[in-house]
Every structure is written in C-alpha cells, then in structure tokens.
Length: 281
Image 1: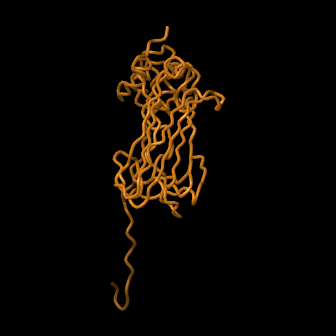
Image 2: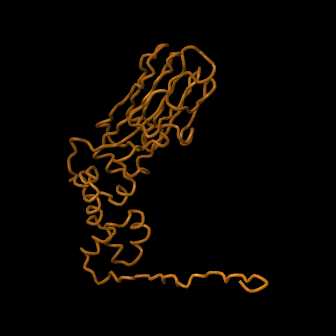
C-alpha cells in the first residue's frame, strides 16, 4: 500500500511447469510369437480385428490363428465357445468371440426401455404402450413392460442367427439349442388373454422349419398380478435354420379403453450348445 493511494497486487501465476507428457513406445517385433500372442490376448476383440491385424503380415497371421482366441476364451471362461470349438475344427473364432452368440439375449429391447424400437407392431384398440411394472419381475433387465389394449395387439422381431455370430455349417450340423422365454401378467382389476408363436425360418425368411405356439388360459379378473412364464427349447430341428421369428400378442377381456391387457416383459431368445453334439469329421 503506497502513501496516498493503493497499489494493486501483482497477479499470482504458477511457477510450476506442467510435467511433460512422455509417450512410450515399445517395439514388439523382437518378441517370439507365443509372447506376442499372450500380449495381444489382452486387447479387445474389435481392436484386434480392426487395428492389430493390419499392423503387419505377422500380426495378421497371429490374430487370425485360433490360439490367440482360445487363450482369451479360457481367461474369460467362455465355456460355451470353447466347447463348440472342440466340436467344429473350422470354428470361426473371430465371429463367435466378437458377437458372443451364446452369452446374451438375441432379442433387442425386451422390456420396452426403448419404447417399441426393434419391433414390428400391429396395433389394436389403443395400441401398445410401455409402463412401469405393477409387480416385481425378478431377473428382468428393467422393471418395465409392454402393455396391450382392448383389441389384439401383436408385435414381432426377426433374429438373424448368422448376423448374430453363427454360420451355416455350425447351424446345420451342430444345431445349437434355441431357447425362448416370455413373461406376462395382468392387472388385478381386469382379465386378459396372451398368446405366443415362434418360428424357425430358412434362408428365404418364409419357409417354416419348426414352430412353437402357446395360448395359455386367460388370466381372470381380480388376479394376483404375478408374472407367468412361457418357455420352450428347439432341439434337433434339422438343417437350414437361419432366422427366428418371435411373435406375441395380447388383449384385455373387459373391452376397456386404455391399456388393461397383459403386460409382457423380459422376452428372450438365447442359444446353448446341444448336449449330444458330435465332433465334425
């Protein structure tokens, strides 16, 4: 502070210089193949395919070889893929590991969290809606349900098994078990009717190779609102299957305006290896 006035303090500035960013490069080429494969096995599948295999001819050969993918599956305990590979000498490791056909629900948007996206819809009455569950559905990825109206509401989804990670030879020869499941419930103050139909289709998407359908007894008015399950396993369905057409429908029995029909949720189509698979010759 000066006499007769004030003096501004100098602005404070950091005198510490930021640490320089050091980029570390390691030449992996001198490593033998088995060490390099072990290192690459920690890289994500997509990066291996899109980037690593483009580095050099050697890296392409290592990424395309089964040994790298087997190591990854053993570490990550992907037993279904490992067992399937034992049965099929020409197993497509990259496709199976990237798509994970044995470890996920192949149906998209099974609980309505994306509204009606990924479903082909036929609306009846006031059409489909999505609501919070009125009772808990254990194991569901979301506590929401598709809700039907006073006239038949139907929706379907077609699964491309090849696009989702399998291939023709494996489907035709080894025929993995195709498991379907669906859950539905009613409102306690209104009865409802539910139905399901699942078809295994050939490559033309029209020829039906196997079909399962169910029309359970209607849920009466003044029910407990608990979810009921419908499930089925397709086994030994023969060669030619390439698609799964999953369709379900519902309506209420009181013909009330709004959404009083069955609540449908946690629909699934999953794959597991057949129990009596024989190795390819």
